[in-house]
Length: 372
Ligand SMILES: Cc1cc2nc3c(=O)[nH]c(=O)nc-3n(C[C@H](O)[C@H](O)[C@H](O)COP(=O)(O)OP(=O)(O)OC[C@H]3O[C@@H](n4cnc5c(N)ncnc54)[C@H](O)[C@@H]3O)c2cc1C
Image (cartoon, rainbow, N blue to C red):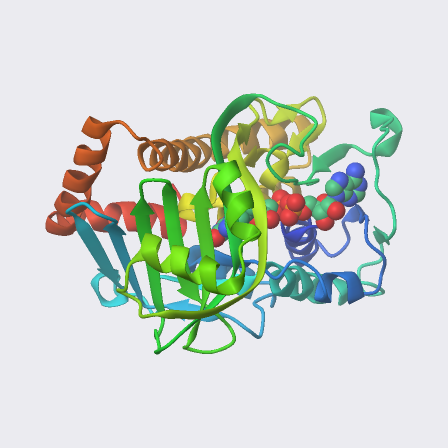
């Protein structure tokens, strides 16, 4: 039986390992995890809220990896600060229980870890190598298939292929409002970039903040005292969601696009952020990565010939990758442009979206389930 090696035990690597064992408990699988066996670092780590689609929800449930804490989104309100045009999407229009869910990075990382740990001792050929950051590879010795799931953030990756620097960074954290916002996701396009307010696990008075702007403005804002920060945020977002009264756990991330042209090379394959890192404007990075992991697990367990499995994988992922990367790049460029004609046309686009229900539904479906 072929030996499968996964490098990187972030959400995508863990999900891939889970799906492989779920389908083939006898698989010869080696997972290289930079972290130790203890969950402590993860628990205290990245608390950024991620928008996880309904499609990912269904996929994660198949391996019992849906986190205990998740906040469903019932309505998405998209608007454009200082210009006409808005669109509202409701779960009822799409006949879904939710349009998506907000989950903290740490929570999804942990739930995937816990579900995979159940295979230890049960799957006879599964080896989880903790405290091991695998960098130098002797590919022939290592395994028959090497799955790269090392992930990473924009500008921190040591490779660059399809690369676009939007000269944007985002402040991420939580804000407290003077009233309640139940299951609402607000996406507001400002002249500096997108500003999103998403449900937060602390309750209906709290929202997750993702505030994009140019890197200098972002760094300046992070140094403001709380009152000045909230004033600037209120000025930028407006008062649709209420008054901002507190903020916390603020930190910044650089944003951009870095995607591989080729996702397979001989016996190596790249998935998740190791294959594509995107702007979070459409909340698609993890969702796309989970679909990568699921398809790859399917093909590797169904096909005995590795080369055939990988070439089928490359083909199977082409449409979804292109559509998701393309849509995200388009939105990031359009909604960060300062050109007047682009600003006018995005207002028209938002209004038309509201009027043209089938188009709105088809875009939302692509974001919720990917391209099939
Ligand atoms: C501000 C922001 C907001 C976002 N919002 C959303 C959102 O709303 N929705 C969404 O779907 N996505 C969102 N994303 C994207 C999402 O975070 C990523 O797509 C997702 O984390 C990718 O998971 P991954 O497992 O591929 O990579 P990572 O999360 O980077 O995990 C990779 C893992 O591999 C380990 N590793 C690295 N190198 C090695 C090595 N050599 N050996 C062993 N281990 C190694 C790392 O330590 C890490 O644990 C957002 C991103 C940002 C920055």
